Amino acid sequence: MALYGPNGAGKTNLIEAVSLLSPGRGLRGAASEELARTPERLGWKVTAALPGHELATWSEGAGRSVEIDGKPATQTALGAVVRVLWLTPAMDRLWLEGASERRRYLDRVALSLVPEHGEVAAGYERGLRQRNGLIRDAVRDAGWFTAIEAQMAEHGAKLIANRETALARLRAAPAGAFPVADLALEGEGPRDAVGLAAAWREGRGRDLAAGRTLLGPHRDDLSGVYAEKGMAARLCSTGEQKALLISMVLANAWAVGQAFAVPLLLLDEVAAHLDAGRRVALYDAVARLGAQAWMTGTGPELFDGLEAQRFRVREAGGESLVEEDR
Image (cartoon, rainbow, N blue to C red; front, top):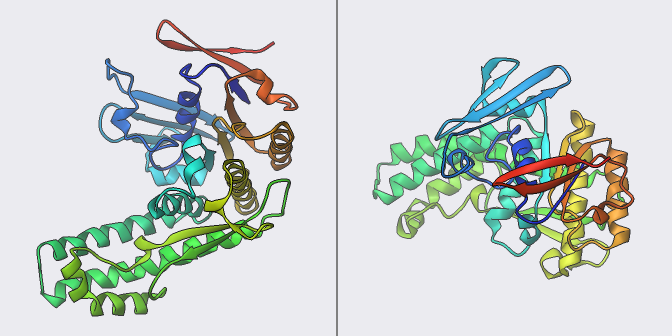
């Protein structure tokens, strides 16, 4: 499906709504209250009919609610029904941003392939906040630290293992027309639960002096190398970085399709920085995946060579109008 129209017409809003059928904050990372139309602030709702399921998610203020087949459900449960992957212009700077952005990206990949990854990550983050709270309060009772660190270590080791599993599945994807990225998880210190717990125990003094937990999977980073050239992704050209990202998203979609079912793909302004040949290669790759893909662009010419429904999106009277090409 190709959505085209001028900037500000509402194309990204449409695919952002689809992204909310997955756990989390959607493709722009916006809080629920930030998604409501202003200044009315009436809330929002997204519904979808999929083979065998009906989904709904909405918010009337802070937080959001989910229903699956008319019954209340958690956001995590959405991931068991449909997996949604996306590529946005903001992600073009993945290799130039800090490690936290790359961890966030990797954790979303892991969530698409390891269903329990969201709960594992949440458990680790909860323990990390508690341990950092003890550090800020200058608590020196070893018993408090030991209890929290034991839970952190269990979740931390699983977090690392899930990330490695996700990367292994990406590496197993068949090569296509886009350059392959050699991906690796980089981190300091032990990678198993026993070793993590011991490292935190031995490092309490250092962490108390620093005011935070200095070691653990919350400090991991994702490294990437343009395999054919042997060049770090951060040193590649803008077009090469875009091609590497597309390769990673396609590999993720292939891995999800192998493990579960073909995902939904949301590709916002995907043709940016791609020449005509690469655009055709992308459209062919998506077609081979058999995925339902939503793509946006500023003009219909960007989708030449793509067999798809095409919709023009335009702004009129403060609203977005969507009209199918005939």
